[in-house]
Image (cartoon, rainbow, N blue to C red):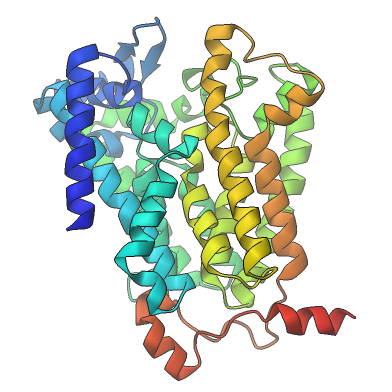
Length: 416
C-alpha cells in the first residue's frame, strides 16, 4: 500500500509537471520516439531522434528487444507516459529497498519505518533524482539483477533475470562473467540463452534494425555522448579523459579499465565466497559501471542498496562510525546534484586541482568501496554455505545457520 500510494503521488506530480512545462524526461521521450518509429516498420528505430528544449538530439540506443517492450509508450500521450513511468520507477525503487532490507537485517529492519526511511533517503540522491527526472530504465535493471542473484540464487531459473536485463541494455552482461567466476555455470548458461533469445526476438520483429545494431551500431559511442569528459559521465573513461583533458585517450583508459576490472571482479568473487551475495553483487555492479565507456550519473542507482547495507549492516566499524560514514556518503551523493550547474555554466569538460576530485566523486567513492571490501572481506575456506536470506527469509536462515556473517572482531583479532 505504501509503495502504491507513493508511486501514485509522485507519478501524478510528474505527469502534471511535464504537461505544464514540457520540460525534463528527455530519455523517456527518446524511448517513446523509438517506440513510435519501430511501430511504423522495420529500419526506422535508429533513425528516430528526440530534440530536447536546449537542442540536444537524443536517439534510441538500446537493442530492438527493448523497443518491443516499450511499445505501450507509442500509444499514449507523453504526460501519461511520464506519469506511468515515474510511478513504476518508484514501485521498483521501493522493491529494491525492501529486498535489501530483507537481506541485511533482522525482522525489525524490515518494517514500514525502515522502508519509508529508505525511500525518503533515496529520493534526494542525485543518481535517483536524475533517474526519475530523465525517465531512465536503470532501476528496473537493478531490480532484475538483485532478484535474480540475491533472492533467486539456486533456483531453477537462476540467471534468467540477468539475461533479460542484458537484452534491454547491455551493461548487465558483466554479471554473466560474475556467474562464471563464482562457479555457477548453469546460471551463466541460462543468462546467456535468455540474452540470446532477446536478440532472436528482436531479429524476428525488426530484422533490419537488429542487423544495424548488432553489427556495429552498439559500438557507436557518439550516439551516447558527444564528449566523454562531461562531468555527468562517472566512469573510469570519463575520469581519465578529465584528468588528461583529452576526449579520446583510448590506451590509458584501456589499461586502467583492465586493471580495475580485474581487481573489482576479484573483490566480487571474494565477497561471494565469504557468503555475502549482496556485497558481491554490489562490487560487481560498481566494477561494471567503472569500466563502462559511459556511466551516466543516473546509472549509479546502485548507491541505494549500498547505503542501506552501510547503515543496516554494522559489521564494519560499529554503529556510530557506520552511521557517520553513511551520512557523509549520503551528503556527497546528494551534493553531487550541483553538477547540473556545470553545463549551463560552461565548465563541465575542463577541470584541474580540487575540481578533479569534485568531478570524479562517484568514481572515487566506488574505488574506495571496492578497496574497503577487498581489505575487510575474507572468503570462507569451505565457500559460501548459505542461500540469500531474501530468498528463504531471515528467520529461517538464522535458524538453519545460513545467515552466517563476517565477524569483523574475529578478523581484527586474527590480524593482530
